[in-house]
Image (cartoon, rainbow, N blue to C red; front, side):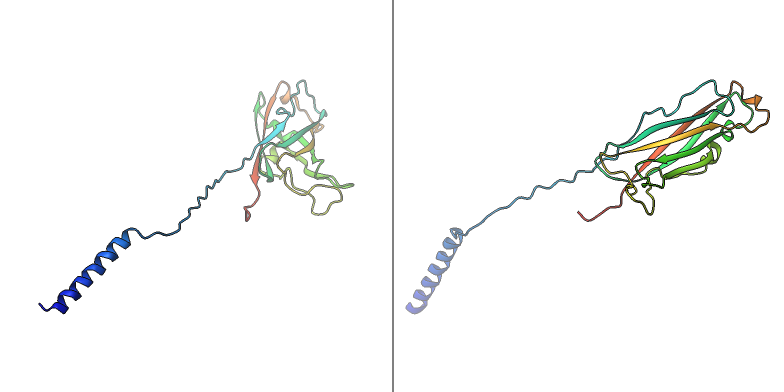
Length: 196
């Protein structure tokens, strides 16, 4: 091998060795950023206050019973609607006692305007209400000083209801000693999802 080739190979070997050594000790700047994220779901928590709206005995045809109660949103999310479902059982009567108990009115005072009341239910028997699901927190389409539909987190709505044992001017002896157990279920629903 000629001297030129030997010198060329030596230089090439030296360059290769230096590049391997330099590659192992190459220095550079670096930085790190960490993003910690959470997803926490809100809560729907609807309450009826008082829990027992009506508890009466010794009724006779013609008796009427006004009552007041509140719907409370104790959750962290706004409620868009509260649907009222009616169910009942009758004891001690062969006829449906619910056909003789009238809800003369159920009014949401907070959703009512200055003049026009927001009537959730008007003149319906409990029997008729079994087939309905009125929205207890729906506002009027046009109102002065009344609240919009729904129930905001931390807010309450005041409601007034009047029940009547209807006197139909006929013999209603079959209802003597009869008992009607009413269950009103208020189903709350969230508002629509939104960009956050």
